[in-house]
Image (cartoon, rainbow, N blue to C red; front, top):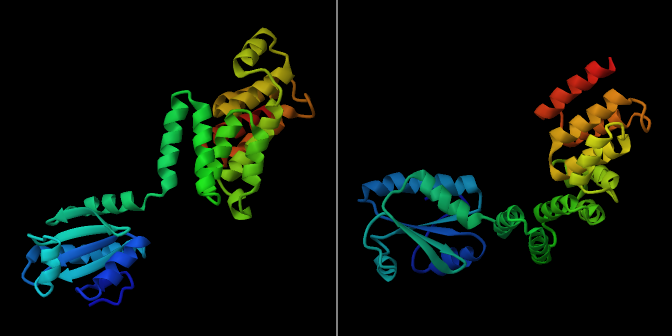
Length: 287
């Protein structure tokens, strides 16, 4: 017996309530065991530990196959231990014998994966294939299904920023709870919005690169190029552009080079290796 709220002794009378009903909200691992089964004495404590660790993410239902022979026969259990996984009223997996702990964890984690996780994987695949429009549309549809998902809102805002759609990204990010806005990754994306503002109406990245190479002292174009690099995720290139502005013309636009560097430091966080390197370089240049 156990006092855990996540572990139950199951028989034919309470099987429906413990297993079937609970499976509507969490995967149920039905552990068929017996006193004479030596491997069972290894497996049952392991499953109990996992049930405790996942704290309600899974339910463990223990069935003594010797005393509950009707249940064991109904589910055609022919060897012990057998673990039957029931999810939303359906048997989705059956494991015979003792498996490595990692196998049970992998199965549980797969069942507990949020629908949004799969969506994000699909979005990244589309993005890498150059299908940005489809990626954004997929995130938009996912948000209609999960309108309160912080993860999906952040993912969509990040993609919108990369597509120069800063205002839509701003609306999404500002709709997040205050505590989420104040921590990464949302706080970093909010900081990136100022670079989105800088890039608004600017030429594309390739055009700006040509322009800056042709006219190194065009600091306005160089600052726009830095903003473009930020939005493209090339943070080192962006930092280098702001360093060049600071080196060549520290007074440009009331210290735009220094301000750009500081804004990027805030966006990336103090522990980022790039921040450590460029903060030291900025200090050396200023002093």
